[in-house]
Image 1 (cartoon, rainbow, N blue to C red):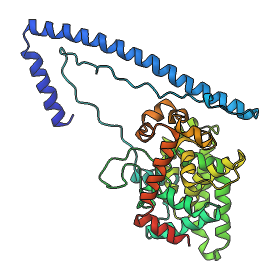
Image 2 (image 1 turned 45 degrees about the vertical axis):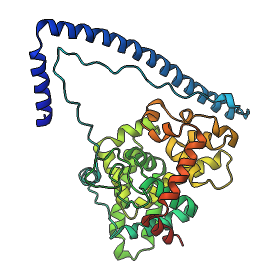
Image 3 (image 1 turned 180 degrees about the vertical axis):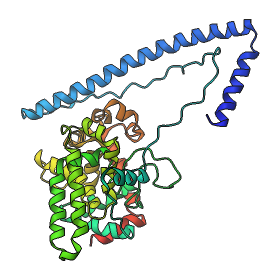
Length: 377
């Protein structure tokens, strides 16, 4: 235990020991009253929250069923009230027990862990670019060839990577490598490890075809390294497809050493741009399958990126007038909403899209975004 925590615990213990029996009895009586008030308030909030998020899920299923049967969606098919917020008393501390320091946050793997896992599990070392500019040039070529627009490419990079992030930028470390990573989200489009595993599972054969086509263009003497990489990617595809094509199953794989090794593909100059592009392309193709023929704005595409394709599609196809009324909570799971202060602050669809556009305007003017834009000319 850290020295500071030990001192705090020791001080709390000394304070407890300094209480006379009568003072401790009074403190315990007050604690029990406060605890009863807290438990009552908390139980009331939990009941309200469970009912609210249950209604969110029910309306979501209702909308999906209506769309499947080609029925019109009505405004009241959405929950139009905001989620309940706990405003009761804080949980009181038991004066008979020493105060404990809060536990440290869980460790989040970082780039060094992805690289070590790739080497250990697959004997794979990514071909890193000589500079971020080199990665940008390759990514720009891949993204344009996939049909993404310049606006989508640059503005989403700005939003996701802070307008100046390198190809290996990780969530929480955008501004300082000495900070703490908050998720495994990596790269220009911030793929979490689960996304990497899912894309490799679902699009692995396409990735392999792209690599094989590139190898065929090289002189025979230069094909060896790329052929070795194809063998590695083939093993990663087999691993990623070893479970059902389900997000929760892929999340379990992503948190294993092999899953972290798959995530290291984002750092490879041959594969990383393909993965980063595929993340956005999957959303574009989803929207097309659902009947959206126009080019999505960067902010609309980001809604699909942020909330998942189904929820994002649900958000962007609603009439513009409804966006001022429909809470953003309709497009999140309870935990995801609680972990997203941006969606909470911008708590109706119109505000969230406007805030996303404003952030994109700001970040797209930074040097990294301008450099990416130049690579798209």
